[in-house]
Length: 133
Image (cartoon, rainbow, N blue to C red; front, side):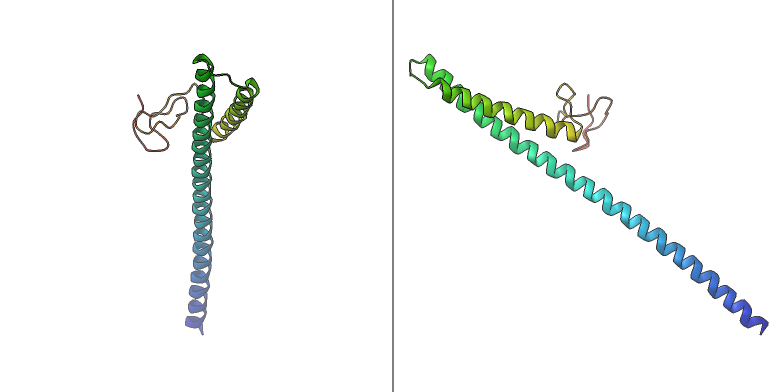
């Protein structure tokens, strides 16, 4: 009977250790999933910022064509130009909002390799890993 009690104690200790390891593994998995979700959100925000930048470039080109047309002697509707400029203002505000969420600052350094904005004090690019100047 004494051997049987030792066996039960050993099995109980083993069960407790397995439960603790399972709890630790679940916690680690939860942290990994949380990190992946944060990375996916950052990629989604960078994609949105790139789309807004592209749209803003398009609107700036359209406004430039209107201004150049005026210079070349073509009559243009000033309201059309004002509307383009308002659209650009909205896009600039949206881009600033996205950049702030991403931790980018307009006056901060940019990666020489991928162009991603870096935070003050960064020694390596957070997007591609390139060493910053």
